[in-house]
Image (tube, rainbow, N blue to C red; front, side):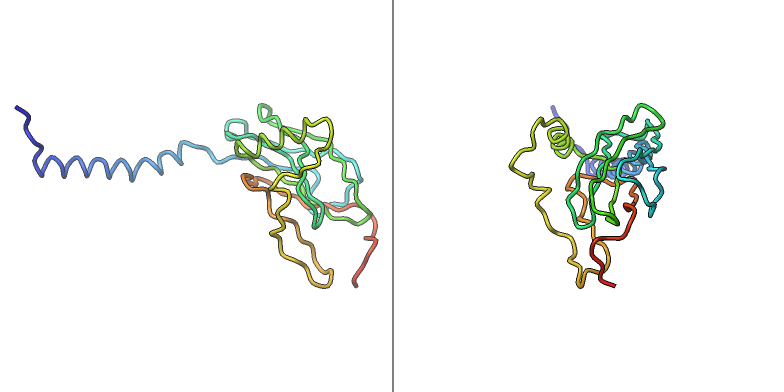
Length: 179
């Protein structure tokens, strides 16, 4: 003969499930470390040559998703530079910026979700540039500038979580000036 649970037993079981639910999320967050990766060189607002080496640090145990270094020119699209090896405490990558004198660039270290990682890998390993541009590169959801003043970088690609961002500029004055 099966005995049905009493109201008291159901209440106790509900309280236990509720307590576990309240504790589980903070405990999971506490057990999952905050990802730590930095861009140490060049410093933000530095003037850099067209090709240079950027360096930084990583706390290996905190990185649980693929880590990528990406760059964008002022008003330009984001481009992948390369995947960062997170097994070492330090990293370095050669970066070449092919713009006009005075052009501003943004370098970003981002954690990529599975889809963005696959897209970056496909773009990095492609032998020839493809005609079709991925959807996340086509988006133009950045604020428009009026009168040519200020700088505007597009939003990071969907699926990218920024860890460190640095703005740099090429030497010289821009070809155009609105002063």
